[in-house]
Image 1: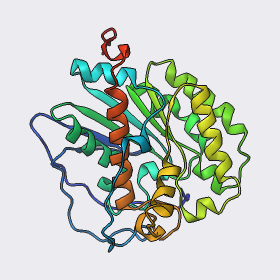
Image 2 (image 1 turned 135 degrees about the vertical axis):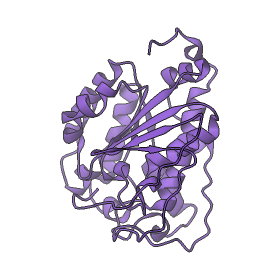
Image 3 (image 1 turned 90 degrees about the vertical axis):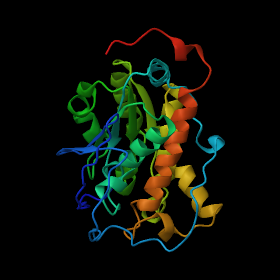
Image 4 (image 1 turned 60 degrees about the horizontal axis):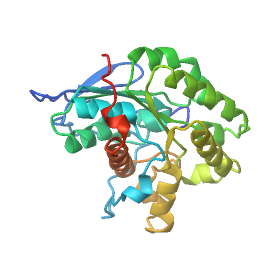
Length: 287
């Protein structure tokens, strides 16, 4: 989330005959596939070293189940049509703290969805920008998200405002304004709250921001991925030290936690999209 976070690294392009995944950063697009490989390279200074712990990423449906279904995503899955996902957010969407761009959560989520839905085409656009808050994201919502005509938007928000000590309450109206614009294009939306990390939880307004995002999601009938609670579970229940899932900067996630986050999101998206509701067999969608 820090404004001076930078990622370095190269992605070697892989290809599958039947499936391609697009993961685009704020300045470029890179073609990834389930067969993507990465060259050996030094990690950025902000990235965590290779983990020595052997903790497994264990996630249950009860931990991550969304409050609301994903009707558009469900219809596309039933119809066998491609699904476009836009990941909107700041540096923990962009991938600060990861050892390579391919280790950010949108890239890992692409791999997870391919595994869960073999043969189905997913396009994931990474629209994370280091240091942004909700106001910055609203300013580029049309160009970065809406014009891409996404089927599902994953909106990670709140951490930079917490770190900067900004008042929490004004975020409610800004979130509602953004959600209204995303609903107007018919996209499914999932909010993602801040990370449970030492420099985040040290701020007095961290819990208030998490609560406000949850209340806004409920009022607006959109789903929320409880990242804060999931990471707190790793620390308080599974007794993982912060160094196991937080980068040395005390803010950003690392390769292990980005991968586990993607696994949890993949499970939540799958469960929500496969619920036996009428929305899953609704009218066809014009592409």
